[in-house]
Image (cartoon, rainbow, N blue to C red; front, side, top):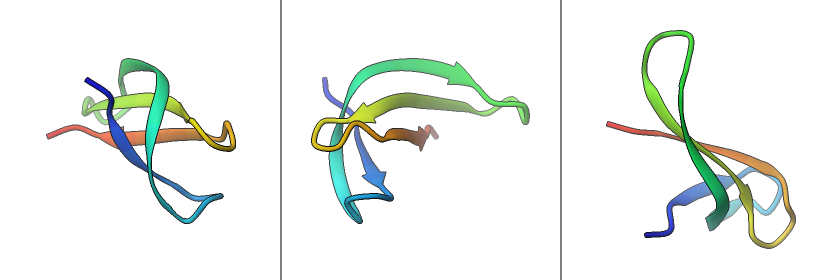
Length: 47
């Protein structure tokens, strides 16, 4: 399943590629990936 996140460079919601689950400093889970259009790094904080 492809994750959807907000790309700051494109200024719209886009699909992420090369996703991986990470744990941030505050112990919350997030998905880290790249924008399929411009390649900018993206994060999506999980529930």
